[in-house]
Amino acid sequence: MINFTYVRTTTAKAAVGLLAKEKNAKFIAGGTNLVDLMKRGVTAPDRLIDINAVPLKQIELVGNMMHIGALATNTAVAEHELVKLHFPLLSLALQAGASQQLRNAATVGGNMMQRTRCGYFYDTTMPCNKRAPGTGCGAITGYNRMHAIFGGSEQCIAVHPSDMCIALVALDSTVVLSGPKGERKLKFIDFHKLAGTTPDKDNNLLPGEMIIRVEIPTNKLAAHSYYVKVRDRASYAFALVSVAAGLELQGNKIVDVKLAMGGVAHKPWRLLEAETFLKGKMATEANFKSAAQIAMKNAKAYKENAFKLKMAPNTLIEALNLAKSKA
Ligand SMILES: Cc1cc2nc3c(=O)[nH]c(=O)nc-3n(C[C@H](O)[C@H](O)[C@H](O)COP(=O)(O)OP(=O)(O)OC[C@H]3O[C@@H](n4cnc5c(N)ncnc54)[C@H](O)[C@@H]3O)c2cc1C
Image (cartoon, rainbow, N blue to C red; front, side, top):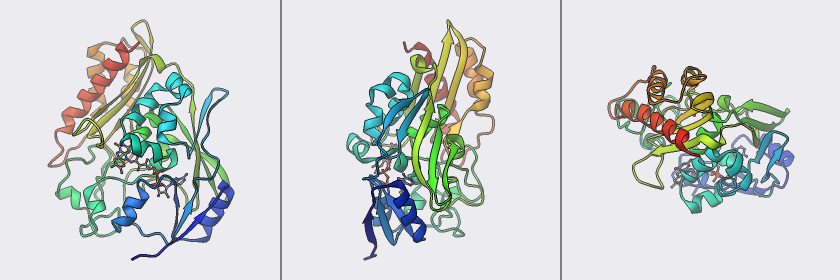
């Protein structure tokens, strides 16, 4: 048995202070990912800092910013009236994730921090540069059906698994962090990172930092947003490919558009070039197809996941069509 100590804390300041004191401590929120990783021996913290009593469950509009606390549960966010009204994309993405029971326990901060579902990462008998740097990547020449088609490195082709984060990156969100040096803000697009030469690091959180909340600016995309998730079964499965799409339309003209893809990269994959192409154009099937072509420009498949090269553009076109026709 691997021993660890457990402590509860009630303020963010105390939580950050406790984390700073111990190198191998971890926060625990809903525990739906961390406990699995501990049971499988993928991670072995010496100390768990339970942050559930820290008052970070708020879901509120502050001026033109939606503030969502790091400890708001995935269910609370998905079902909140303000979220459904202003950011249906986020609500849909959350509802596409996991199961109702898991969403009841899972938190916003924990969801952002969840680790990849790559089988080599979870299997401690296998090589994995993300779990054990320097051991190699089992997936690159092995079983790589779920893996990245964008931004892969020679050390890791794992994908980021969250649905919520795909909507949050599309919605131009910001993350508020608290750490030993005080509070700072990070654009959501910069929170997660590509694997590069440090695949063991999933994100740009600095040592000792805690996620406090996410902020989302209001927009005019609500009437035409959609989240499409393609997976092996209808629920309780991670995305093979997913797309978050939001359109602001004047008649059939695209005034604004936000697009992101999941299941395709080590981080939530924003499709900025496709957005630039679509802005100012008509919302037609032909333009959606051209945008999908642009989005796929730098895609690279491995032995088992070449199907994603077709699935990804098709999912993008479907998401755009569904967003357009939603009213
Ligand atoms: C069977 C199964 C199916 C699933 N399917 C999906 C799916 O389809 N889509 C999807 O998106 N997700 C899915 N999930 C993942 C689930 O959404 C995550 O496990 C969950 O969101 C993690 O949240 P948590 O609060 O339980 O985190 P925890 O397990 O408590 O923590 C996870 C990590 O986050 C850190 N952490 C937590 N809060 C903070 C904070 N405020 N600041 C800094 N670090 C923090 C912890 O230290 C830990 O490292 C699935 C999970 C399971 C078990």
